[in-house]
Length: 332
Image 1: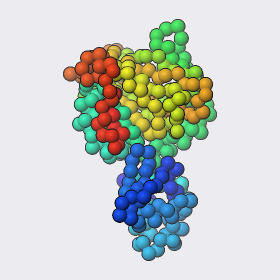
Image 2: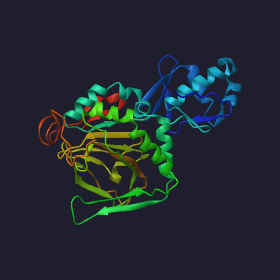
Image 3: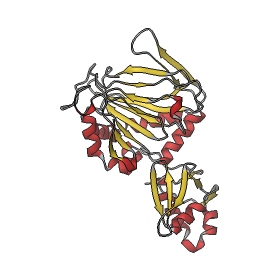
Image 4: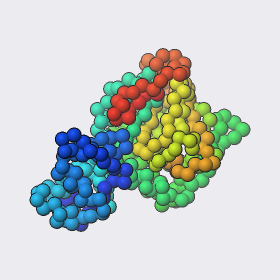
């Protein structure tokens, strides 16, 4: 739980937040694919932070709406929903993915687990707590020390960029590594995937620049059991390439901010990244990694009932399955 009680802390309306009129004197706030219906008092509170303001300064204009403590509690809720961004003391870093993931995602654990077991990749829009995504995204956007890694002349072919450990964004990546490797995070990954996630975690920040790509590959060696890609690209245009391609169904995912892709790793979970165009103007940023088998098996066993590539629900040409369209939850 995030508690914001310091009058000197400063907050501002989230840059991705837009508004439209709602029914019965309400206002609908849109953050990514999520919509919030705001009563007039809640909208007035948000409007008070159109420019960066401390709680005390905002309270001076909202005195008829309650005490400073009441305003602090309201602001805490708006920050948790991603409608406001703290500019002062940052919100506490979550201790596990159970705290970091949007509650709507956690409410669909059964559906997600069923699709992972069927051999599909699950795509979750607006996956993480907004303040967390903004902090990590801003750190990677400011990063300057990226180095190219590539492999040609052997399979699979690839070229992309990874973050140097001595870059200023290093602490943000280290914090992500601690988050994904926490015992509670491993337990959640194991519950969703039906696979052992007790081994070493691999995690790093990646950037695809013009000319970068990843040929079809499966990631199924080195004891890897579950893979994840947390996209943090802002305003990425589909014409720039860089799409995540799920080969079993032929589905493609255009990178978008705070979108998480997760899938069980097997020889059949072939995927790729299309080449980034020389005309691309955005930054294709992501945090990627794998949970692995505790026993360090070279080729971990697949869970019971796992669909083979080209067979069953994940067969080639299948349309993405909308688990929850309003929340942007898909199975490829």
